[in-house]
Length: 138
Image (cartoon, helix red, strand yellow):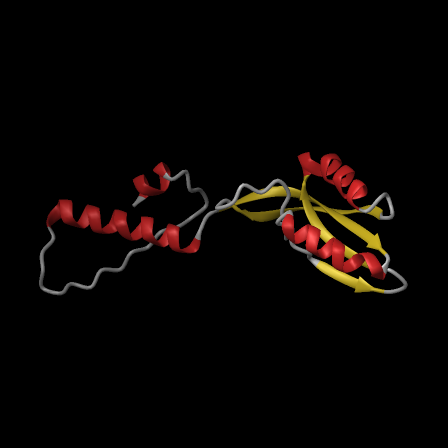
């Protein structure tokens, strides 16, 4: 089981397999294959994530831009963490630290500079490794 975790480069995980004896003896090789397969199947089922330091961006737009911006963020595979509705709409998203300037430039171009972007908190978030995310979410 440990060898499977190491081969898949999985860290900070505990794997526990419970085997109920059903009268069939698998032998040492059979047990190794069964345990290895159990760990591998479990990882594939739950998926893999990586802890990445991300910057919260607070994006303030007019109501008329909100739907368009939401659709664009969805296309970029960026989840909206929070939305506040006041005189304007403020969206909270998380972006990888090394993509902030590229993302903010693309956002300003998309909205013709009619957007206010403020920095929020920095935190570690779990990012799904099944997709190649440029920026991702919380």
